[in-house]
Amino acid sequence: MNPDTALHGLFDSHAHYFDARFEREAEGGADAILRGILPDPVSRILNVGTNCRNSRLAVQQAAAYEGMYAAVGIHPEDCHYEADVEAALGELRALLGTPESRRRDKIVALGEIGLDYHYANYGEITLDRAKELAFFEAQLCMARELDLPVIVHDREAHGDCFEAVLRHPGVRGVFHSYSGSAEMARELTRRGWYLSFSGTLTFRNASRVREAAQAVPRDRLLVETDAPYLAPHPMRGRLNHSGYLCYTVSALSEIWNCTPQQAANQTAQNAASLFLPMEKTLEGPA
Image 1 (cartoon, one colour):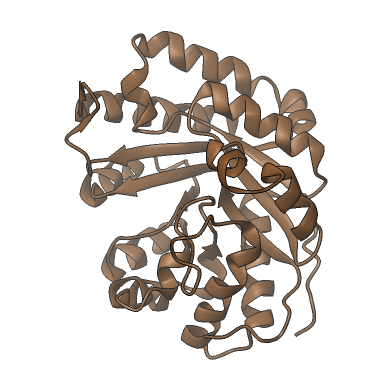
Image 2 (cartoon, rainbow, N blue to C red):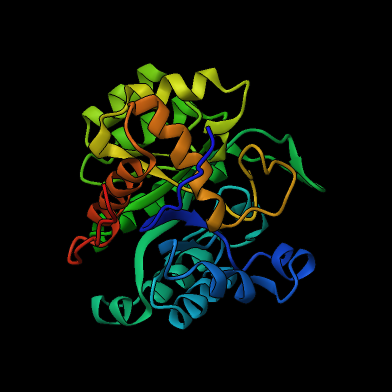
């Protein structure tokens, strides 16, 4: 996996450019990075919120870049810090606004939402699976009401996440940074879901992730960075950004037995189909 040839038209379907790590670790912060990678080699980025406060920041950043869009939602970790469930969901609903305001704000998805069972506690706050599920279910209902795709965070909660989305058959979306089994991948894509793969696809010990990617139909697979986290090999340990998406695309091209540019084109088209159905995806060279 060595992307020697420059790629074009990359679509990073999941990043967090409001994250404080950019200001701490990158000279000039996120803006300096984004100015260097947009509109080429990265043509589009989905900037994904995890609570109402940083979802507003995601919207503000999206307004500053032609190729950036926003997703707003309440993450399963962040929900533990919300004392009033109804108030938090009401704030999110107000942020989502109307179809006209969403177009103006470039909000194209509801997320990041889901379940995370990795930690037993968040500081002094004990993991509350019931609270996570309540937020997840409520936001799935909201997505159905507003006809928005969702971005699902599933960390060590595969069975419960799968059962939750099955209870909402009218909802569409993506399981981001997919870490489940190949069998679950087949079931989700059979039911119309997309799966997104991050830099973990490049890790040397990630045979399970590659097996899952092989199980996904080519028109249902997205790529992402989850920036500033999950930098791909050989950049592991560094601050991640959308320019490093080339490594994940290159790893995917080996699985698909195609050129990296073909993998970039296909995954960009897939992301546009889910998040930007009214727009055309500009494909790079084959």
